[in-house]
Image (cartoon, rainbow, N blue to C red; front, side, top):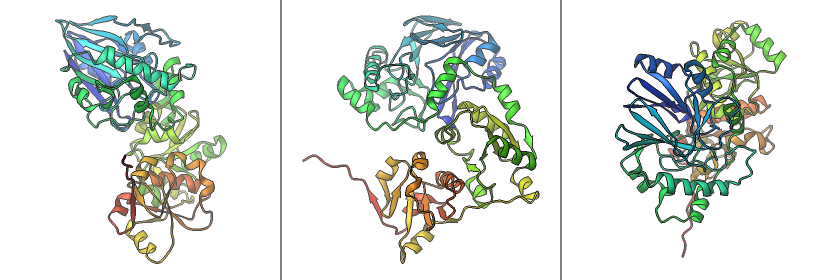
Length: 469
């Protein structure tokens, strides 16, 4: 028996490939299924089942494509209602894979169909559990992402999660390994550990949600506390995962069409396509197509695309590092953005060679800001998350989180120069591109961000948790 975790860092997502005696399964595959097919071919393994722990909200799964290409049935847990052919397992149903067994454990809470899969060896001994978004390392799945048709509140779902953990997972042996669907960085939980595999016994010690003395009321309060609004694309991804989607090969064929500078400009004008520049923050700042939006491929690309581009059907044309165009289209499709119409062939150089206009972002370092603040009042905006701002921030900075920027433009000066920063320059470059596209050209980006600010004499304020007397 072999278990392989196939982890995708930009989504903080873990898929799993398990095989024994020539038979294998995939749990929670990504949309591009070639890595799983290649592994199975190398190992002379037949994919027997495709298991889904739930209808994922943060990415489009590869279950439909993988099933079509392998003939393996898609397995969902109880109450799942996909519109395509799938096997809906009953609680406790067992599936043989070579000499091992995979047992479905219905664990509602994150969503009502959420199901964990328990792996038993040839002797029937529990070896591992694949918990999806029911149990993370250090946390549990947020209970506010269920399908909109559900009438349950997040408090109701949190109550189900409490029962699922205590009746289905916590009674299992401490020695078994826990394999979750996500790690730190995912929007599906709040306090996930950076590790991606752990024992159940250690999670009982480390994970607040598994405290043995915790009441259901305490659990509900802690799990629902501090949840921000989920990204707008989450319900759309749930819909795709429940109803099916276009094959990724067609998406790649359309999205990787090379466009001349003239074709690029024509498509932008005729279709209203979003010009998405995915190069580095520095390259974008030094020269970009006016009104293009920056979301760098080497940052948290897909989550920010989903967070900031409201319409999942928005036409997109790309300015990408040469040779990485297919990667960009693939990563867009992972979160359901399938309407990429092509890329600028030859990159930004092809644009400038045609004599077309470019724009830049004025940049500065934290030390420049430090010097300016000695004799001047400066308007400074912090685009990090609210929790980051509350933890520690520059005294003179106002908080405008990047995710809320579009709704807070009225508070920004139109004529007076202002400064923006994030943690290290990635998010503030996204913010700068959005602001310039909306006519704010009087901004300066602090490229070394709060990290740089922290190394200067600029006064900082720090949140202090109140004590109870």
